[in-house]
Image (cartoon, rainbow, N blue to C red; front, side):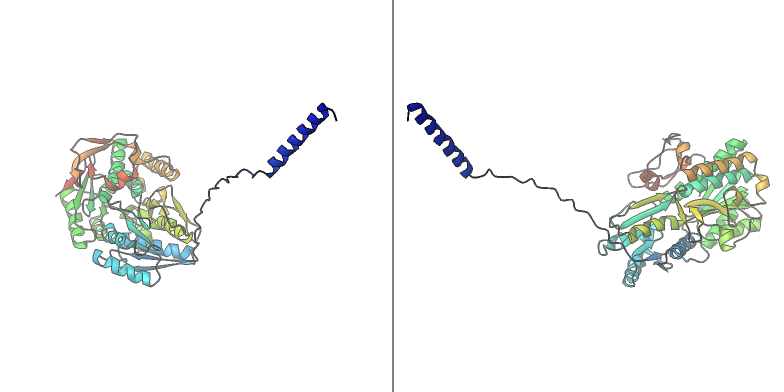
Length: 424
């Protein structure tokens, strides 16, 4: 064998040896990528629920608790798997004991229908993590995961009432029998006042709105005395209220002046007085807000929306198929401009009727709001809050065509609008 053949043979042996060694070498380490695991919170859909409302006042003969009671009944009518139970005349000291009694009896959602007696519910929210607790907002905005706060945009319907009241007054004096200064009351009176002033400008009238406080929500004797004072001493010929008894209405009927109602269709639902006295009312459908809460509960939502501020563009369909916005003007079971008293209607100029119809339609569609449209100028009166004094008279707090946050409207609207006359 010559030298070339020997060399090729040796080279072949070397190559084969390398290949054999390579095949015998340990395989490189394979690093597996860690695949992220998505944890989905599975909602536990509920078969049913018990809605329990703690009413701060009696139900019968009141517009506030009456409207909440009607809401609970309408929810139960629509949802066969939802029960409605309640307690009346619940004060702050009784809120928690009654709530725990209701929970022991099966309540899943517990509501305090006024802030002063609903706030204690937050103290037991952690103790009962599977229960929804709910309270009205007056100015406090405290929430927890299962402690929900709510209020309707009643000021929208109150603006429409103001337009009607402004058109009806002949003396140029309108009176409000009110409870006490708080953000909730001041905000609602502002909505009414803006409507009155819009009507005054449109009709070339000079109108004064007088407010006098009774000191609490349900003081029939004091409310009646204030109504009489407004009528006899201040020549008021249109009267409304931010209190809860029927006394101001009684005074208006006896004196033969127009009355504008609150919270409920008092003629159609309670049969109080008639459209000869009640020019219009605004009706609050708390069931629109309660339905949202009940549906969240039934869906097993452990983190529901905790601040609900719903208005005319939010709606509910009742068991009978009737569609209701959260608030609306209503009278003798009629809504919109049809709710205006047949006796009052001929006294109201067409331009006001058309404006009421237009603004109502716009608010139901969610394309207009009086608190966006008009500027807010402080009257210098109101309620000083912690770290938030009443703005000096003449201060422009908000320019026209600007909307303040829900938080501000719900908790910081602490001044009357310029021109409001607050009586001692």
